[in-house]
Length: 318
Image (cartoon, rainbow, N blue to C red; front, side, top):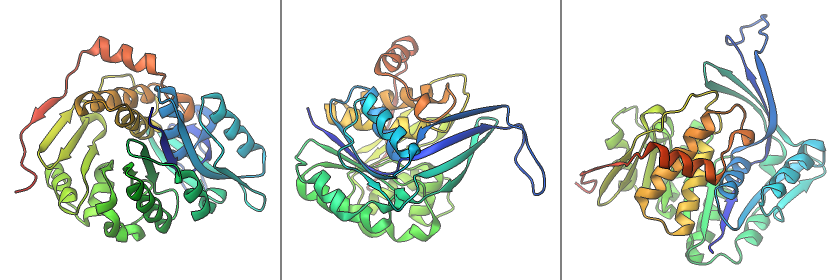
């Protein structure tokens, strides 16, 4: 069974459900608080493992403190290989406050250890990559390391996947390594930033990213679902209807689930529906890692909904 190697951050999350945004010199009492392991790398790895991947390896860094120890233990409990998670004695485990209002999150991050990932770690974790394996990288690690990891993944013949989040405008130079990406999974804003465009034309953005050398693009659109673009056309997937409690972990569930489909060699139609169902279920529970669904839950939702993605004819090469 192909392995999935994920390079990203482990962040201890504190998720506050609030009736209103905080204003200067004002206090807001939270209606609820969820404290759990998080960070996009951790969430994606946990999601992939819970959803049936047989071997998931996470590359990251935590501090020598109780937050880091708890997250490593939580990953081991769900079957993630933590051998390539470094413990930095001189750093603090990254922490995030996630403020959720009307199911929409805002983020306050205090990264420290998560930015300590090294080339040596990445080199060791990818040394045995082979064709059929999947390498997923996010923007929680510095841009030079994203490029370095993609170079190693491409050289090994692995399928290279990038989830360009969290995206900062200073990262616009990422276009230099877009041709190393087999699959790019951005949301609308991230696609606009990558294209240096304010266009809200999803087809223009998706096809434009293909034109910059990306193999395939899955543009996630929240409640509007997702669209996969490849040189031969596009495939749209509706979102699965769920009673949303918190959308925080949805994108990580989607990315982790899509990597499971890639590793298992599923047809793209099945993989897209599987990832969409996983993302929907992640919205139904509060928190980050705590909201990630099991494989059985996703399969049950797929069976009950009986939704098929609608194919669309679109020539992205024109």
